[in-house]
Image (cartoon, rainbow, N blue to C red; front, side):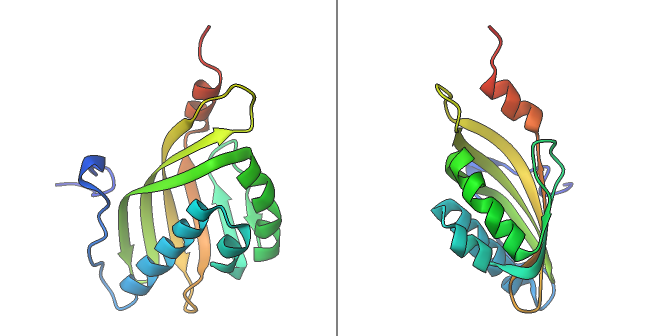
Length: 154
């Protein structure tokens, strides 16, 4: 059967079935609240979903790492402006205890004249603190795919 994240079928909708451990539902709810705030483009609501010592890691060359809620909040205004109409569609969500993995399809309109909508798949890994806030997020997405869509061959 394999890894559910690798074998997800986006046409069947997100998998949000029960995880294991007593905190899986709290973790799942925290992650979904966070994604909901991202999709609402509300920088204050997004920042309110993360801990004071939040760690935001990006594996993409285009991403920016930041530590701390205040630093993250400061980056959100520019991020949301650069990624107009940002949307994360959940393809799969797996939670266990205080950890979760969420496969997504991200779409946005870049702040580049004449650019169309960019779509790229990725995965978030989360750790949720005992307070129900996101303590650590690692984001995996292919910046090469984004560049390909922004600069199509002539």
